[in-house]
Length: 382
Image 1 (cartoon, rainbow, N blue to C red):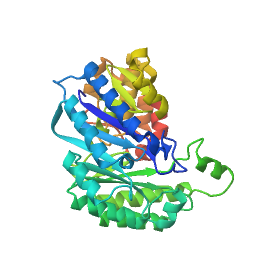
Image 2 (image 1 turned 90 degrees about the horizontal axis):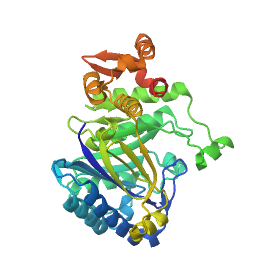
Image 3 (image 1 turned 90 degrees about the vertical axis):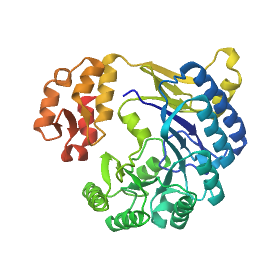
């Protein structure tokens, strides 16, 4: 629980996907150089204030948006600055998100030589019709080619992002996507059920009756077939939505789920340090402007929240339960001087009686039934 990660947010996209509610900008190539300079300034500022050579970074993650809309040389330079400003653990995990058709073989070689050692490819579906409905700017062939050239560039730790429960999606098309994904032999799969978020084009389209989602029974079957296929292929489900071959769990995200500390760089990014959560303004233009005028006393944080002990305790429980191994009750008590049995009382006992939670060798964890109804269980504990 003393780990430290670094996240760098690149908000630029080719176009905004109709299901996406995260902060990102379509186009805005005019802002790329200015934003890169602002990130460099913020990185140096963070280093001066928070650098702790006795606690090196266990992970660095470049996410988006689509980071690979920036030139590979720019991304390499930003990574070099991260490594220069902060000490890094031996064999640290250094990830970058890419979308198919946004980086070529030469670019992937540049990224690998720079030190990126883990690739997360935003595939979402391996069905061209579903990709079109999702508004994705790539084809299945683009996704396959990206993985193949990544292998040739030396990446031996690759994640594929996939989504199920898509508009009009059938069980057999999802099975085809899973089978095709396994044929590509990634080390890691992040598999999410589509959630229709308020304010997105998909929310409006659904309201207008322009598409329907698979029913609950079909979605549960999709999840069941996923678990069967991945288990047979040697993948371990180590978090609600994440599966990995042995030794390839995402260390950066595990630090989040263990409620560890992390530095967040970029517009809309979040940092968590010394019990305080910092959320940067979700406006790239304003983000750049404030970092260009640091002398005026303005910082980039739209919100700073100091968690009290109870809030931090609850958040650690909720995040830890996302992991299939759950969380250690002894470590929880040592960290907060609070016992979960005393804190939650009858609520905890009821969830155990209902078969949603279990305690196995000191670890509180969701049962198989609890994993299916995780959001309901979390709502009881939050």
